[in-house]
Image (tube, rainbow, N blue to C red; front, side, top):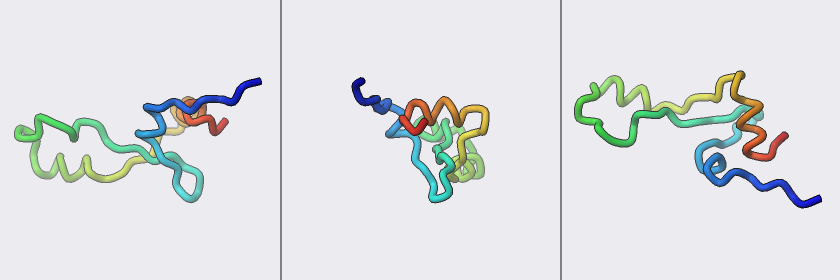
Length: 65
């Protein structure tokens, strides 16, 4: 049976933490930033974790499952 291929888009967007959780970046931080407040942009900078509902789907895309 052939090897599983990792989803190219997913491997650019997600990363594993040391404890095995999946890190992600926040959306809405790439363009049209002039109308967003400084506080809103600053809060979008922080790294988030993938919600437990989506963990199985992301792991499948990354061939971790």
